[in-house]
Length: 406
Ligand code: NAI
Image (cartoon, rainbow, N blue to C red; front, side, top):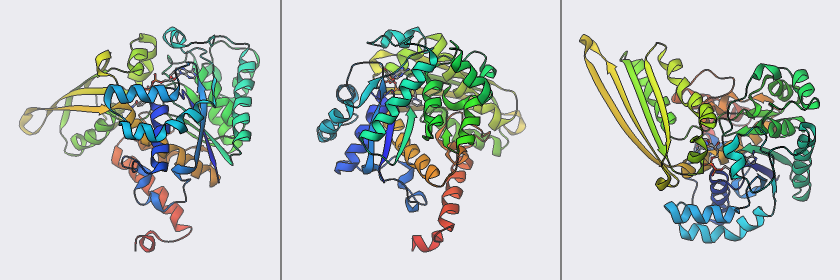
């Protein structure tokens, strides 16, 4: 079985490093450290092999995938030179399958990144049908058995009046009427779901979160999930906050300051585009702690950091006898090295869900996202448990896990 993967934002850091990583695993120069699906019980599921993934995608810039990975190597040695050299040819070949997408409602800062006229190409219906034919052409040329679409494009500003699109009927009427408020990410998602391609939204953008798209996914029995990969500060928060809650230590304030240097950081400099990211980074503490406290998230662009991201968090909390205490942490990570393995995990797991005929949102994938669609649980270990339970349930159909481990 060949799984085709269509990456929206294919020439960006996350997508390019994901593809470089997949091809590096295939050629044996790196192992799968960092991938959740490389651990039991997920290794016992019949997931598509990383080596067998075939890539293509949309972007709005001309810089090739190889150039993106070269820049990442020069800026932060991720990946290192040996890995880069091992995958160059593959990346060139994939880049030939990248076509120009749409940047409708992505904000001025994204339109300015583009080397093409992408803001307003035809009506919404024309754009949707162009995206559908791009998916179709790739699937046919590569002779894939299944096509997974992943959004790894720049963050869009949050949608205005999402309720205008909260049923499939309203959404399709809006497409027919050329509604100017539908953003690119929702159009890519619609084109995927309407043609029954599983869809993952790794970004905070609207994607498949609209009511009309959730209805479409259920109607067509196609799996989808989002939003916003949980890779850094929020990952740590979702592991730590349950500790404060469980020990009845009252958090008085939680301040988080993030600085990052890549193009994602540049796009998030724009207040409109930043709004969606702040929303998805800030909301989870309220759910996990369950009471009012002061909590703020800041994101600043620091160009010299390149792909490296630093988060400082200061947590002020109160314990027994009214004693006030503090915890501070610093997280320093390579943005793409943290994100890429999760993108590969999500592709494999959503393809598996599709093979099982499991349409709609996928709660077992909650641990991968800052704002998991359809799931209120943000506690990392409980979210991971959902994934382990899911894997074991699917193994039960075939063979007990204990026997497989022997
Ligand atoms: P990037 O700026 O390197 O890549 C984004 C790519 O998307 C660029 O090549 C850009 O030209 C392209 N693009 C922008 N709008 C597009 C459109 N409408 N259609 C097609 N292509 C489009 O950014 P990076 O670092 O790769 O991040 C990608 C997304 O992943 C961002 O939304 C980011 O917030 C999200 N994300 C990243 C994480 C991480 O790096 N650790 C974690 C969680 C989410």
